[in-house]
Length: 283
Image (cartoon, rainbow, N blue to C red; front, side):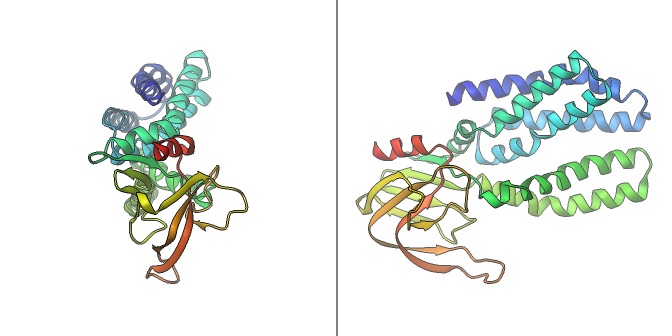
């Protein structure tokens, strides 16, 4: 399934210039030549970078793809609003389809598995719910949207406003992209020796649970008393039970920068494909 979804994503991304280009060009007809050139260069650069990410599945390219993919339907949507019609509508549909595929659990697992070492199975963890419900979208808009809007403002010779927007977006870019990439590096990993929890967002150190220490792995009940390492992620959680309490170092917070050691005989994690993760653990 993940192979079919990945190739569907690649095909939709390759088709993007064909289905979006005419409507976008028509929408920019009344713009100045510098604005047209800036928009064209930015669109082609973003498309080429997205294609490279789609063709080389690694955790880093997953971050790049999920950062760039939402921009395609935004551009296609703007072209559709300015030039409504069948062609622009098809462009919007194709780019929306590609962006949706980029965020599927199957595609995410294929990308994180692409960076795996040796005999290990990686399962991407779902992002914390409080981040998904607003902050991630706002940060994306401020960074990616800010850079694009600022470049167009500069091309339109709006030097002061464009400069301020570009400077603000550039200042956000490094910490925001680092945080985005951190979400692509949150994994439940199955190795011959047992399980590894790799989560720099919620854990200060990677946790290895040896095979003999794992008693049970199952879908968690709503009233589970296990240590919650899901970050309030949306969807089902998996509960891992151990023969004896394990020592975990929980990541620090804004109030306390140092990590906090806790002892837990069971933990909750949130793989994006819980059924596949449980089946792999059972094997």
